[in-house]
Image (spheres, rainbow, N blue to C red):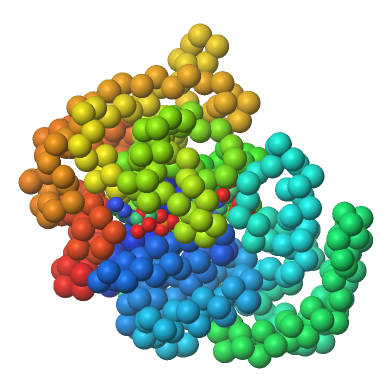
Length: 440
Ligand code: GDP
Ligand code: IMO
Ligand code: MG
């Protein structure tokens, strides 16, 4: 029985949702440890598309326990809407979902404050998802946040909402917007308290008990390593810890309980929102890759910027997360290209950097050193066995691996569960492949 973290190694949207859904039959619980409904995790089940934002991507599997950790920020309205939408397409029981009582809530003033902050930044704006994520984490750090557990005592809730709304109204009015009515906010949230009460529990205690009883947990990351608040391309990041350490702090599970970190990596790179992106393609080819890869945000619908695979950034991501096994997604989008450039170094002020610089003012000026690999002619989509993969594709995989100190153990070749190739040897018993294969 192993407990693993599955997380994004780039700027998000690597295909984490597909991979978590695929692997979840081998786990008893799937737990989200950070982020909020800024995430959009797409899962296909027999041609039906389901996009998850807050609810862990294990929910499509009967009986899987789905935990929302203290490291997540939760907008109750978004959660309830997602639940209602999900009920129409998936059979699950409410008891399968647990929200940590320490999970911080997103309130209506968080969205307003975020809009003001983005407008004030003008040209320098982050390009956030405008879901109130950053401001909710700000309040958490400032020790004035409202947590899911506060919904269980309406007097406490009312007092906190009154105080917080008054403070935020000062800002809101200064920006020329209508102030919020604290009474109306409280009444709205008192309604959510009623609906959410049954989901709120002690996530840390529950998960540790599961692990102690020999059951296994998959820790699901949102966003990606380069959007991590500490290790990403700050300030063009999200406001949470999307790297592996976040799984421990975001759920109250110690590092000794985690067996491995599986990094999900797209065969190329994408980014949504502002911020440096050394291998970005600003030409027709970039647009064509975006079109073929359907690279439009699962949350905001924005076009994702596309570029080549970056081994400098990937080596960094493998290091900060302790990743030794990778999952490659979407190589099918590169099918048919005569050659595929890969970034293998950055030139900065005339010299080659041997480390990924996270500072935007450096990253914006680096010149990516691109080395070109031959493309593969045979489409990878229909292939089911590692051995049957085209030699040029395996050469591409090896070329990347030689530069990142991690090996690809899984290759995804399409949106459906069956479009996946496992390398049993490289997984070395980490995953119960019999269970996973039986549930495809
Ligand atoms: P996440 O945020 O990491 O879960 O990724 P998203 O769901 O936002 O974006 C990934 C997109 O790629 C989704 O539309 C997936 O359905 C799709 N996808 C995942 N794996 C593959 C793959 O191997 N090939 C192709 N063509 N699409 C994939
Ligand atoms: P998943 O889980 C891609 C980006 C936003 C913006 C920055 C900060 O689907 O991979 P925020 O609203 O979090 O304060 O925005 O982070 N961003 C994502 N980009 N995938 C995501 O999630 C993202 N979540 C946030 O575009 O640049
Ligand atoms: Mg996404």
